[in-house]
Image 1 (cartoon, rainbow, N blue to C red):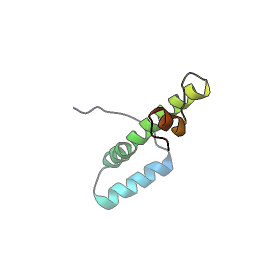
Image 2 (image 1 turned 45 degrees about the horizontal axis):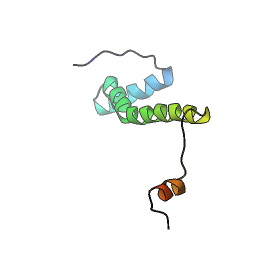
Image 3 (image 1 turned 120 degrees about the horizontal axis):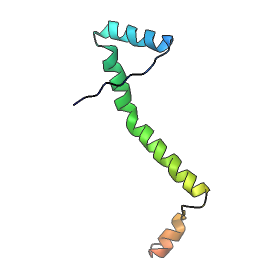
Image 4 (image 1 turned 180 degrees about the vertical axis):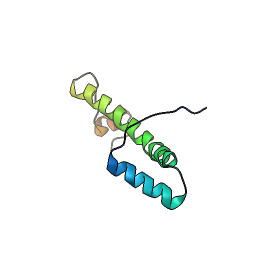
Length: 77
């Protein structure tokens, strides 16, 4: 199942999408979907990383040095 999502594009972006669609015989919707699909995972990762960094910076999330972890696991030389 697919859902309709609306967004506003400025004139420059709309012109670029229109030109690309005309040159390739695809729709602007096709290219918007392609762009979202290719970037959504990175955006999710960035959002998650921002949340973790907020917790680290506020002291609600602990951080551990690699050398400490190696020592605790008996992996240190």
